[in-house]
Image (tube, rainbow, N blue to C red; front, top):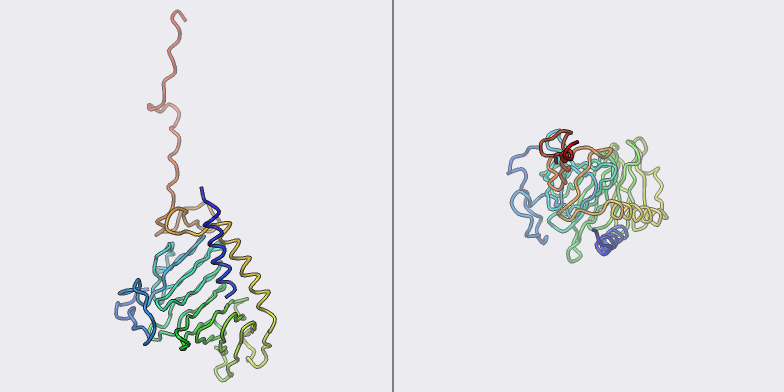
Amino acid sequence: MRTVRPAVGWLLVAATLSVCLAQSPRQLVQPLPPNVPHDPTFTGLNESAAKVLTITGQVSVLRGSQPWALNVGDFVQQKQVVLSGPDGYAIFQVSDGSTFEVFPNSRVTFRNNPGTWSDMLDLWLGRVKVYIRRFGGQPNPARIYTPTAVISVRGTTFDVALEDEDTTYVAVEEGQVGVRHRLIPQDGMRLVNPGEAIRVYKNAPLAKSRIDKGAMAHRAANALAEAFYTIMMRGPRIGSGGGVPTPGGGGAPLPGDTEATPPPPPPPPPGDAGASAPPPPPPGA
């Protein structure tokens, strides 16, 4: 039976976070930038990977065209695609300590450009939240791509969401991000500060996009509500128990799900020899 304490603990973690393909080994392993602390658990091919810290619901990684269920402690390699179902949510960490959250109904490519360390995510669908760690006040450059925008950061916390295929929404909690239009290269960069948000439209230059200076309170409340629902209704997987459901529920677990509970055996059919025989009739009957 699940106790209240772990659920409350994970809720506090979520609240804190809300407020505050086949490749050769040579391609997969990229050197860390200089002067960046290194997590010793990221070794070998995993040095440039993303590690699953917590996960709930259906979150998978594409291997070829086949989705494979992710579990806590798994690694996502460069150029791999992460998918989340309608109840899927996960937190990933990279070797410098930066993290990113993937929310339900999202599709994200991790480090789609292995030759450039700072190219972190390509968001194709849904929403992510990114925390880029700073070290001693030094910049830690990272870029997030969407179909319409390029978001450049140097240590900050921010949300990126695709409201539809033509519109990217960027909201900043801490630090500052620079936003460029991906489809209009000659368009200039707009700086977005803490508490501000901006929308990037497919066919409109950034100069016509208004910076919303009061959006973050509403956005933070929505994020907290989502985290509460995800953790309290589904519960995080921390290494044991709880399979990954297929869309719609009730289906077989995805390949790679090591935590699925096997179904109970079916009841014996009528007349099974293993069943107890009826008592004999009384004498003289």
